[in-house]
Image 1 (cartoon, rainbow, N blue to C red):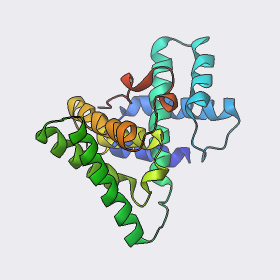
Image 2 (image 1 turned 90 degrees about the horizontal axis):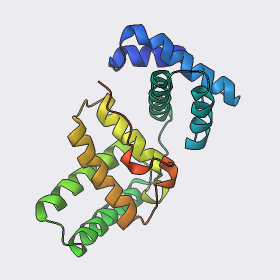
Image 3 (image 1 turned 90 degrees about the vertical axis):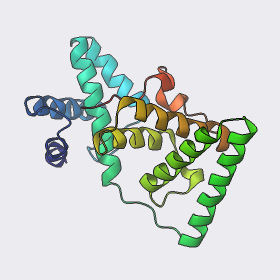
Image 4 (image 1 turned 60 degrees about the vertical axis):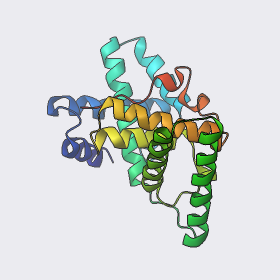
Length: 197
């Protein structure tokens, strides 16, 4: 699995070649520390546990590098997991209704027409990224993966990532009525996945 992750890092060019071995080491160390198979996606608490352990023996820059390595690895795993298959007509209808509910929520809060259009564009982009997952199955991790996708695959600017973040957080909070702050840990949504260049 780490060999494929190494190819992923090299192919995407998100990490300088000389740092790739460190990224592999941090992922390996983390999974060894937690005694988890490399195919499992880790929760926020598990990552925090490892990073707290690292802080005792490593410099801040190494802890930050390990955090980035684990976020990228989680994103890598998310892309490796095959999408769930559901009946297309039912799936399409649920997303169409979600889009209508989002439009209603935006208008109820007196958002401008340009904000409404932008947020709906991001909703459609998010839906395209999610694949066959249904709206009620969405988790905070899906948002993290989407932002990583924008940074790694699409190489969008930080301001564009922030716009996407605001749109999808609005979806979670005001349409799906889900609190994803807890899933992102103590840092909350102010600490979105880093922009990787």
